[in-house]
Image: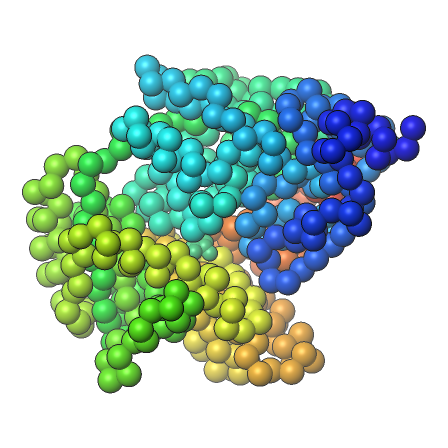
Length: 462
Ligand code: LAC
Ligand code: ZN
């Protein structure tokens, strides 16, 4: 039997097709304009089918690239070596909401926002909220250890994953841990799988921890005429004893472009605002939140902040969050670009931003920066603008390398929440020693001796 017919015998004829007949999206994600055609696209409906597919791929040495919602920004879902794209779109059930234990068991193909909304209706909260949550899958979020604005108070995806069902490269099925809040039983395979970007196994079931959903939320937009000052205000806010549920930074162009993208009126030309902090506070009681607003007001005055916009109605809150969440798409429509996901200790953020601008001057590129300032996580968009291909191809890797080396010096690393995937793997040596990379290679080998799982990812010369 040929591969296609074998796959069809596992998942049914309509759920396995040849790559050249499949929609183009199965060969790409949100990473720049990269496209790699898969040989086959396969859509399993259950763990047993995933297991049978992996047994086959293992036997025949066929690459398998697992795909969620395709919103990745590091190329993790690109089938760069062809083979099978394993789309988890049919494994989209919320299996069990356990209100007694505050847990939920889900399949990987559930859309993150669908899960959040379902839980919210029961007063439950699963906080990690990447900007792509309206289309990204929870399985992809686990595979990249996604974050989002609320990570600053509530933590990232890994802080909510209790247990996983995983199909290993040879088709065997394992549980990585237990459905418990505590676990000191041997190696932590659960957390090893989180963020492993489909290189160690295929996640087929996820058990997540939940918390009660906060009742009140306040949102502030604080303008600054100096972006470095805005970044410096961030750690001062935490030092004043406040833990916002989001603390986001946006340069002027980030907001301006997002407004344009959403069809809103442009920024006032005469306004000299160069950056904003978007600050959210949440809780179960309203009065303390207003006390925090007052404290924030006092803190930001030391950094030359302008007049604070207080979003006290749902429509304004929604509008401000839409502006923030659409920056990535807005940048994409403005210029060819390369997105970095740098992260440094929070108080080093002003130095990081200043370095980005300095590198821009040295190499002759423009950049737009925004991101999760409360986490020290800055999305740096390096713009191609009108630079010619040759100049771009030479300056870009040089500038990125210098940026990551600096980030490492500051005690940070090259990705806070997007992952390494395909487009960052060549820079791994800026943040890891040879021994640190080698240890990871040995882990990969133990899980996937034949190298069939998401090949050509994570490792520099893979
Ligand atoms: C964001 C994505 C790009 O923060 O991580 O909007
Ligand atoms: Zn982000």
